Length: 424
Image (tube, rainbow, N blue to C red; front, top):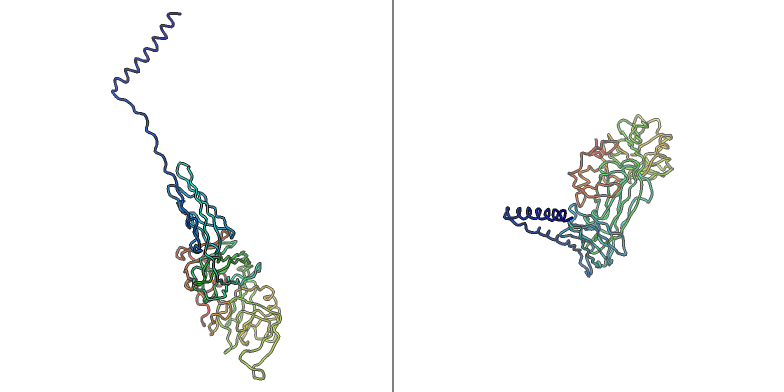
């Protein structure tokens, strides 16, 4: 037992000696490892600051992170839901639309640093209370179906001076991708037109996030919303010289009918029009001839579809069937046979496209829904922002038109021809 104990003790002594020798030979000492520096805390700032009163609605909400990234923003109020966008670097969050007037908001925002430590701030503030308002009417009916040329039509009850603010507050949601633009007909009428005809069978929702938006120096808006549908494509091409009308349904030629258009002095004007309304029958009398004078008539005309305010229709003209396909004999309307006019009447939707060609008479802007008289550059020129709208299932954004791909539209089936209303 004594020998074994001695050997175990000696073994430990040798190990200790080796360790001491190694230290002595190097002549160095090894300091303890330095502690890792602490990661600075993230901070988050909210604008408007808490306690603010009469906050301008147009400014919205901004959340900014320092020393980290924004991870969460929640906004509570008694009004509509507040949505916003986070910047690509994660440092800034901004609300998308104007804030509601006369509303109290509570914003809670969180930022996180690289170590996973969070910081949260809260701001409660109230917005300015407007006393004057403007009203907006959407021309398209809820759930109604329209042709592929139909513009979205907004009418304001007073002249709008802050036109760009109105355009920026509008959102178009479409079931299929659409490029278009907002443009002003005058200070009370604003339309949206696609660059090319709407894709067939598209569901469209237009929203005006107008609550909190000043349309004039003192009048603020109210939120609006409407959903409607675009149906199948129906395009009619009227040839005043050929005395024929081609009808295309969903891009395919389905009819090539004999017609008669306006005789000399009563020429049917050129242009790409949209059908407006219809009746069976419609009472027709000449606007420029008095009762008892030569050329006066007073007829109940069957299967009549209007495409100008001045009274030009596509309609049944049973009295001119012998002339149809050969010569122009009408007072400006497009004469059709009873069976053909009935067929077209039963297919027609408001906003279907009717293009008149070959006439010595130019079309007049505003005589009907003449939005397609305009070229794409003209539409952009009448916009207050001069920006295009890219719409889809997730809503819409304003974009620089120069960033858009080449226009694929081709007249007459998917878009209107340039200068289509000029005399031939």
